[in-house]
Length: 257
Length: 179
Image 1 (tube, helix red, strand yellow):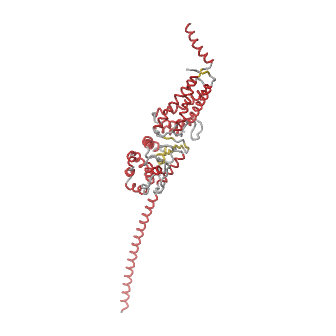
Image 2: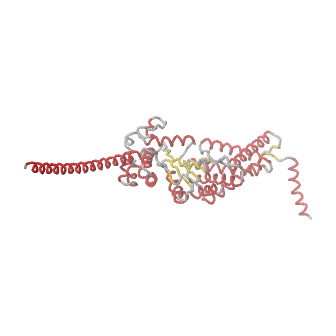
Image 3: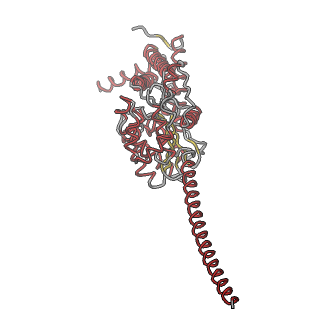
């Protein structure tokens, strides 16, 4: 008589166990899915931040146009030099809109801050930091357009900030950490009696020094100095402000060869 | 004003100075015309060199663009012509005077540019030479030599044959007038 009762109890117990086991499995599946999702999200964030932090490590891109253009123009300039501003405003701007846009000319900016300009080196640091996040062109335009203002009080940051979005400026600011408190090459050279020595605690100085070293090989004796290459062949360097009309005639002559 | 007959020390100095100036102008013309970037000699390469020289002329910021192109194309051939003229020794007084005027013009423009701190290339002997005290002293000394040659040329009397030829010419003119 008792046997059927026991069997039914056993069945009920098994059913309960199966229900709980399935619930536990479902819970485990949900938890593991959530955990996996969270882990993936965290990993993606880590990768993104790693990618973001690896972006600025790349060398600054201080160029205009396509690398495949037949004419390559290297411009050695100082952001505080008035002649460089004239050259940028009167010659480079129309060139960028015309021959660079048409794929005929590739412009490479080279920093050559002169010791006589108090904020020349610092402005080059800002430009290099901006170049490392791909914003060189905007910052170069802002620096030349407002040269009189920042050259008077040294407030370069204000004009760099105006040329960038808040997030971009934040990134540039991060790259500039450690640069602003340190003496620039111009002040160091004044103290050291003329020997230009950059402070290598600032990461941007490496790029400026590389450009200066290239300039010394030419040798650059004044800014702006332009070196023209046509199909890889180097033409003599020209110094001073040259009008776009005359430079264009030279380019046309080169392109007809 | 005293004049010296040819063959004296003055004449020798004028000749040496004239030949030196001829060499300077020929070298200046060659350095502006010669093909750049190891290109072969051709009309195209010479045109390119003259277009490159136009950049140097323009950097002086003195002339409008059309005038810059004209000067850049005419100056090197003119320097070549002047160099050959000085070398030939024909009409030395005129060639020396012209050389002095040209060098004085160059020197004035160079002093102006240096005083304005333009930081440009001289363009005197082709591209790539920075304008500075060294180039000013060099071109200043060329100007002094040219002035000395000009003065010397005017002080030096022509040869007897030239003098007699000069004397015959007015006589022939007067005899024609009497007819």
